[in-house]
Image (cartoon, rainbow, N blue to C red; front, side, top):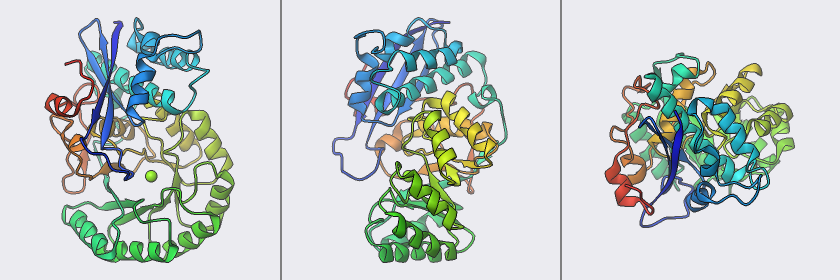
Length: 374
Ligand SMILES: [Mg+2]
């Protein structure tokens, strides 16, 4: 089997806000083969930049566009393809948009391998630890107490057993932050796990103050309290609180995750499969976490394609107790799959169909697509 083409499809809602909501647009990667099997991946990056990374012509030996690298290769040589993509973009890659797009291509290649083999991707990744996964409802933190009560009540009513609230008003006033978080805890009751995502807005002392307050509120983890680069801050923080500290969504490549694990003592590592280097790299990152007895809970705030890839990884590794499950109302997020994943009785089922186990809804792609092949 050989890869014959790679298409980068950009979707975009008619109006885009500045909210930290990656479901307002999308970059879908479509990889075609001479066997008639097509695989799909998704990239969480600036979509226009990502498309250029796919389509760019070779400039010289370490500045290729990624389509030129992978066309002609056998998808089952996925490690070699990954290393070729890395090596042939070395001058302008190794992180950022190139690694993001490598992630989407790699995701599509795993979809192809699964479809060709007639097996779900988690079987090829080496595990079936779970046939259903506990999702946490993931939403932006509302601006006020009433908004928090309404959102959390709605999630509990829908039978979510874990809820993450992040960004929005958080990170500017620690007293207000704690008040909003306390409201979430009181509204949810003690049986629902609450995670909090500060979106990198604290400095060390603010982070420590809030972490210690959240210990008393039985919060499951405190996510990205500090900028991703502040490894010293993360180490000091993790060493000073019993609150689990989570981070990693900004990083690409196992080397960055290795450094993060080695140089901090954070508790939950969050590779985003649409940015970190795809399933090939995420599996290695999950192993690094497992070696250090850490949780590895993929970041996934995009559409059902990334959710599918995340489910397949989580099913195949022993150290991921949750699935991030965005509840934003974006029609791209909600409409991209022919059969969207659903949370039922607090669980999401692991698809057993070949590949990622999804079909795309081309009506949604046609409606919001800015560059279309079909
Ligand atoms: Mg986050």
